[in-house]
Length: 54
Image (cartoon, rainbow, N blue to C red; front, side, top):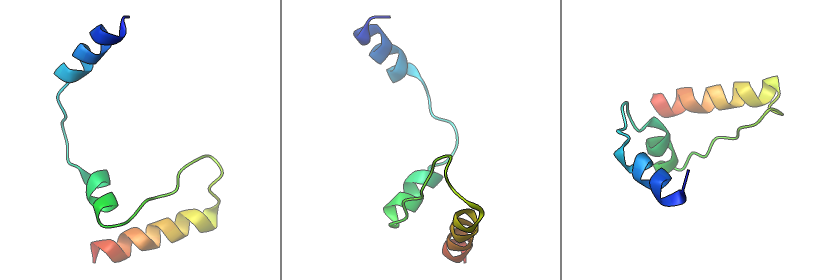
């Protein structure tokens, strides 16, 4: 697919949902991601999200 055709296709796609990721990023939270997260990392992320929510 040509780049311009792909860009036109993407432009027509509508977004459904909310902007949770954008809102969290705007508040200064940039979550780690990847396949190398250990259980302690996941618990830390969960605790941060719970604290932001409250």
